[in-house]
Length: 366
Image (tube, rainbow, N blue to C red; front, top):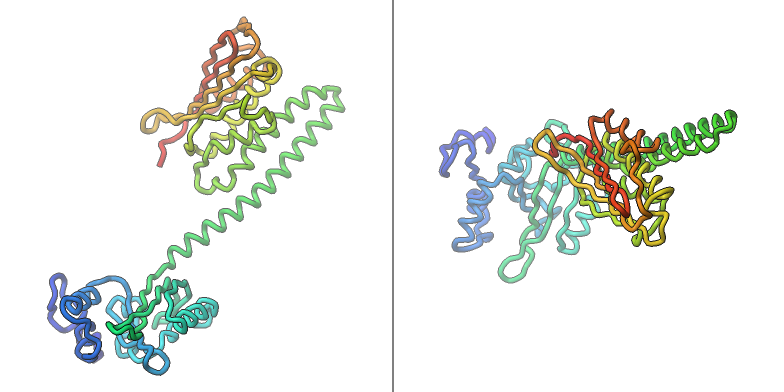
């Protein structure tokens, strides 16, 4: 019968489920009388090593090949080895064909320098299966300052590594998608330009191209976030308005760092493009002291949440309110686009500029 089998058949001496009891710390103390911590520390050591779910081992640097002299139950559960198969061996028996030698080198260097190190390396269980081990290694000294042991704690971070790999893959895909989208928008712009020249409508073609490019800028800056489903809308707004390059004295961005569904970018992007184009041709940005403030907030309750974007022009030329209270093809485009996305926009023409509040539905923040 192995030590672990004997342990499982022994009544518990600790509170809790008997199968959770680990008597290896007590046996380690009995077999190593010169390794006592003394007083309450000795009891605390036994309790901590017996009850912790963290995989822990001690190695003796004063013996040849730095053998393991203690491994708690969590270590044995993690690796699948019985105590008799662990004690007396160097930890390298957990390494295998795919173990990277670089973290092993760092461990060896830390041992030589009596230093602390944290590495991640691929280890192997008794059944041959592999796992990513986050190993914390450090020296333990006795009361006289003499190196007594090296302490090692192991943590299976396979799921964490998998999540990192998935995130890396998502970012790579985002970069590739960004490249393809740039090409797509270039092709669309080229088609629009050629069509405009052939039909003698260059100015109309340029208006269309301006809108296409505004969409491209909005999406290009947010693709890295696309895999998460929600993006920080501020970066898209800055990208949309960047070509106007009016400086802080003419444009103030007041919004916070809210995140919105990726699908909301197109609606918000085109709305802001049309408003900016109008401000350049007819509104606040036709004046040297003209100012536009853009604010964005998430509002509403539960599933009825919206992102509210406020466009406020100040110090512009005297405003003439359009007879239809909307006016212009740009405003018609905004209205149709927002209706398509179940959004809306309110406009107020003040004496020195337009104030427009656009609302685009978004789902509840997670």
